[in-house]
Image (cartoon, rainbow, N blue to C red; front, side, top):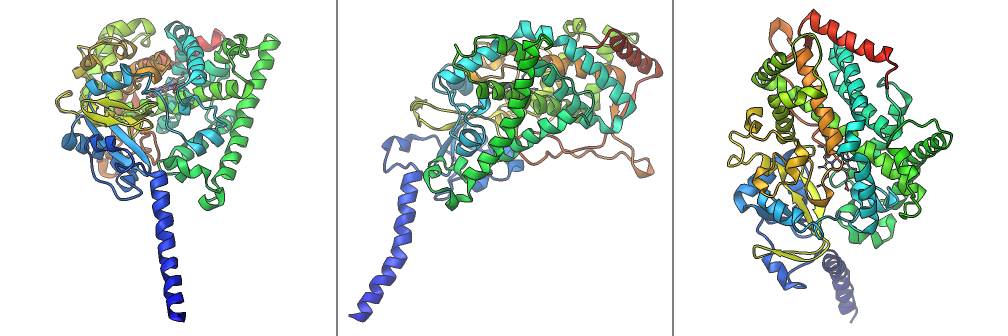
Length: 532
Ligand code: HEM
């Protein structure tokens, strides 16, 4: 009898955790046992029980190559899984158009993120916000302040900051990486709040970048288990490393920075000293009527800085890397610029129409290094079927730009940086976003459907003016090392979500003394006019 009791106890001890695991499994992981339609999920690489393809996707450096290989193996639309979340990868312009564009009312949400959005952002970050009336209202407002007409009004800011960038490159070429970051943050700070960041040491830089660092940390893949398995958020937080308390601290810090900036600006608008900027336009609207409270307003403005600064800086630094690796492209662009602009002045806004190769070079930079390492994740708010495949409600739908941009059927010799491939597509990126034929799109780096980047007009202007002026004024080449041997630049990316290049060596030298004089003269004239 005593023995039997022991056997019983041992069995319970073994079986209980198994039963608990199974309950947890069925609670968190959807399966064909509970939904027969899941037999029709798109094909894809087999994952492991519980974690799915987590380990396939955990090394952010390898994801883009895997995303291309899976596309070749499984086709335009394939499936992976992380924990309880289904991932559907759209790897052709047609699939993107058919789903993200044409069915955007159900393909425009973002996945639940208990850590990153619900607690650490107080539910207020537009970028992570689920599709619904609150997001739609914000989107309308940001569109009205970032549309083409507004972007034209911001051009003087970009013009001035770009002239300072050229001076920074003359005086301190070694630190080109930080100069591009300063340019990008300063423009977006001015567009949003009316403040410049004249140097990288400015106290506001530290403030803003501490918030950006929090954002980078919490969006790193697999950073917080509740964001990979949202259903676990209902468990006691101590089981999961006290994630809620940590997220609350992040929220307290970030909201203090953003509310501080918002309130300061409100005061300036009230006493008539605020410059023309996004916050001013935003505050002057009837926010209450639109259901926008103070915290949401503060995060919406801060969110612009998050969305617009590192994206632009990353693209400018990737442009420099491309010029060093593919000097023929730089040479062809310089020949065009010299022919159209000459030596006596820097390229201006009016030249853009006459610089098709430079325009193509901007597009090629965005194709070659799309802004993040994974693809752009949308999220379905309804069940759907596409070409016989079941796409469950609550799937992450990836715009697989690494597969599309590097598909040799669409882009000949895709690993080569060759702006000439875009000479037949002379329009701005925003025009191609709306084309009916998905194969006429230039690239997908601004996203797709209703979530497409609202800052595209501002971004494109920054890229054009700086790329044209940098190529006009400077030679970009490999740096010379010991024994006069060229140093191969680092081509890897920094850890994390964005395609930020690791610091790399580059020799950036003015093309002539005449170019230097001209850059100095044009900047001094701006300063004498009182700047912006
Ligand atoms: C080269 C620069 C930039 C690139 C490559 C870029 C790219 C993107 C992408 C891919 C998205 C997500 C689209 C999607 O979900 O399909 C996005 C969203 C966004 N971008 Fe940009 N962006 C850039 C610059 C800017 C700038 C300068 C601003 C502001 C002035 C801005 C504001 C935003 C905002 C507010 C969102 C969130 C939209 C939403 O979720 O509703 N971006 N951007």
